[in-house]
Amino acid sequence: MACLISILKVGFKIMILARGYIASGEFNGNRVPQHLQNQIVKAYCDSNGLEFILSRAEYWINGSTVCQLWAALREGFHNIVFFSLWQLPCDLKERIHVYNYCLKNNIILHFAVERMSTSFDESCFLDLEVLFQSNALISTCVSRNEYL
Image (tube, rainbow, N blue to C red; front, side, top):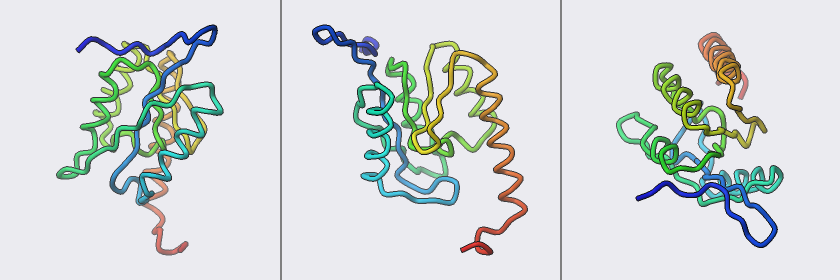
């Protein structure tokens, strides 16, 4: 199947299409119902001039959470809207593979909960890694149960 067109012209209005990406299982110690994730992704798209395309819900198969992510990346959309930054792969090598693929294919990643997005510059992915590494340090030093 040919790549999807990620920009549609409807009358005089140009619509920038964005594929949603949500989780069916737990991520970063959290579980959020899919219908709520979709509502937040849609609201993010609406407020950022993106035309929301139905989300892909990631499977949780043997601890792997990248099946639908790669399907979304390879569809041809230039905007992928994650419910949260923490849905990126936990494995550093896999994240770097995702970053490189996005840079090579001009894909912008958006993170609805954090109200963030990447650009076509490698430095934005380095900033994401700072967040990931900081979160890893904090979660190994602090027990979540202490604060519930």
